[in-house]
Image (cartoon, rainbow, N blue to C red; front, side, top):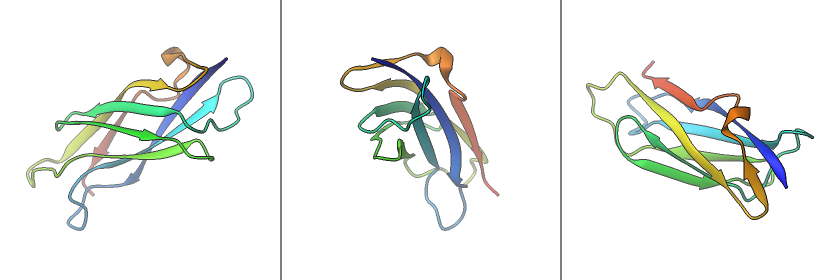
Length: 104
């Protein structure tokens, strides 16, 4: 069983061409730094709605929010958990548990 580290980064800012916010999550084994495939990442956007995704072979997956109000200047994504067969998730090992995404 491995402890996991979750890192988040902004992949696309909210703009006229994008109706919602997009967040990319990366899950790695805390001991070896190897990417973890088939980990289910879940969380919530502050603008409303939950999101989840399953990591691929690179340990990455993308979470998208629903459409955002045009008056909204920022939203954030907060991780609520990471799950998978034989995996142990330790939120204390996260490099980031929340990411703010702003309009350009």
